[in-house]
Amino acid sequence: MACQATLLVTGATLVTPVGAFAADLASADGRWVHVGPAGSFGGQAAQTLQADGLTALPGLVDVHVHFREPGVHAHKGTYASESRAAAAGGVTCVLTMPNTNPFTDSPEQLEVVRDCARQSVIDYGFHFMASGDNLDAMLAVRNVASHKLYLNETTGITSPLADESRLRDLLATGLPFMAHAEGDTLDMLLAVHAQWGTGPLHIGHVALAREVEALRRVRAAGQWVTGEASPHHLFLDETDAARLGPLGDMRPTLKSAADVAALWEGLADGTLEAIATDHAPHLLSDKQRVPAPPGVPGVQTMLPLLLDAVAAGRLSLQDVARLTSRGPAAIFRLQGKGQVTCGADADLVLVDTAAEQTISNADQLTKPGWTPFDGRRVRGAVVRTLRRGEWVYADGEIVVEAGGQEVVVGR
Ligand code: DOR
Ligand code: ZN
Image (cartoon, rainbow, N blue to C red; front, side, top):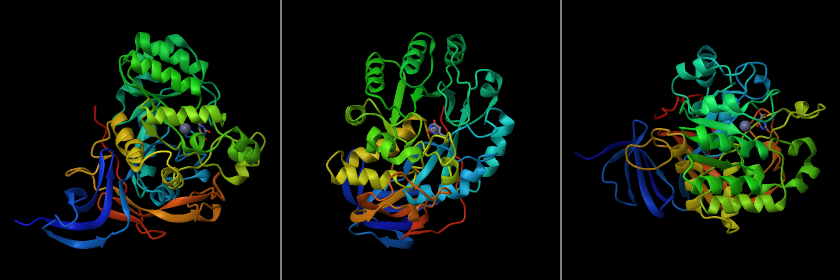
């Protein structure tokens, strides 16, 4: 019987981590049912999109975002607002952070977060707070991507976990962890994990050359540690921090040109397996306070910046697919995410690699409506975003009301 599809995308060049070809991509019931060369789909499709001249990438999986709901920070961003910005940036799945106010540190509070997340237009999952004194909650909670350790001060974190014996007890549980740990603190954490850790440890927003080197060393020794880099640490440095003031302030802060170069090397040699935004919305009025809260938005600008880096020869489109979809989905075991293969979720982003645009505050769909990249000219633009077989963004508009679902985390 000929295959019945809901949607056929034909003629785009599909880029995966291992190759690129002009493709026929057909989906039904939210999953890919045919992935083959252009012209190879022999079935019927209810809707066909002719995508000649466009490039198709797996939908981006951004494993580090702050969507602020529920609680007192919700004026900075919500699942509705920030997921729309993400969809406009080609992101089809996010993992949200637990430094909400109140923290996401109990099974009950996670249910409140889950209720908010139903407003998302893209798929989502959750990182849970590992506060150091909520181990029972960590063991009870279901379907979380990781337990987040905050070892440095940042938004909402005034007393970071510093106690080595507590870290030892946590890491010995074998649960999956993610950490905010900078410099000396990262060295300490890696040493404790080397001795006591029995599960995976992911390091958020690696920013210093010495941190890349530390990860390279422990990974070579077989330690179960992965790392990510954030776009602001790849595309801005400390000279931009001086120019941008509070709008260029985040944790970790912007670093030197040598540190930036080390991050690019870490991405190229596989030391860092993901790029994730650390999307941290704060209103302009929040940023005008003294001291201003650290953090910058990023979900809508990550892919245009990376496409521009491809145009400049800094990495390949295949690298982009590896670092923004397959890599991050694999680190957190996100079922059906991160690849365009039969049976996987039909998540896709169509981009025009030749389109030039100027990133501007006026185009940002985030609640804050500003970006540290305002005014930057880039080559490459997002044209359409498909989430589980449904267009969520097309030609400049968000075209759905909600429809995001919680991703299943493998164990
Ligand atoms: O700059 C940052 N802002 N770094 C973080 O680790 C947290 C984030 C936030 O939540 O605002
Ligand atoms: Zn963060």
